[in-house]
Image 1 (spheres, one colour):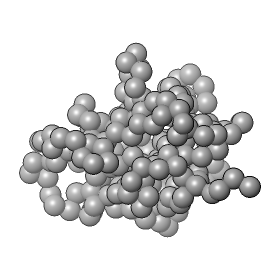
Image 2 (cartoon, helix red, strand yellow; image 1 turned 90 degrees about the vertical axis):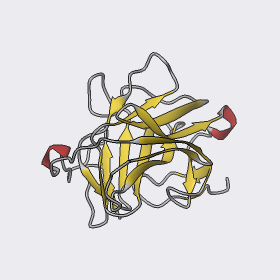
Image 3 (tube, helix red, strand yellow; image 1 turned 180 degrees about the vertical axis):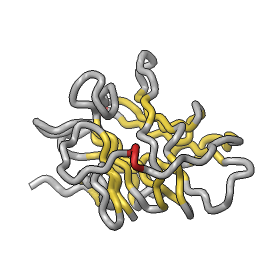
Image 4 (cartoon, helix red, strand yellow; image 1 turned 135 degrees about the vertical axis):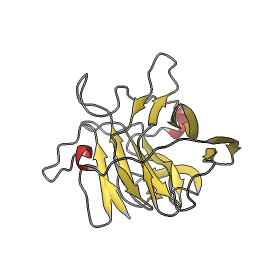
Length: 196
């Protein structure tokens, strides 16, 4: 497991966006991306939507939305955490994120290769034109992950599920039911802590 946050650990987490990390790694250093074609829509799934890739090697992993920060504490920012699921590796080429605002253009992910279990944290850009998502997330909103223009995953939430200082995501990672969580960007998800 890696977390990619432009901070690469032995099991790496990568964060892309407004975070200022001294030990950062650029996606330009990643290996060349393989061709990502021939995909078939498999329709809605219980915890989102999924795409199957016709002819893709069985060792190919896929990306899932794992955790969303939409109501950060003061001084922090919105972010979306993705996790690579399955066996082998997945190229982020062709993947985009967008919220439910129809005026927003889907934002491409930085191009890199992820291994199964890796996390990629994408933050809202700190300034217009900067790295990261060019839009914030609302109290009642959704995030759609697409590949080559086709939706592969969707997480939506209500205003009641948007509580300051908590996140919304899957437990266990990548496969579990959507629920309120304690923020763990680039790390395995855990249930939200009870208020003091």
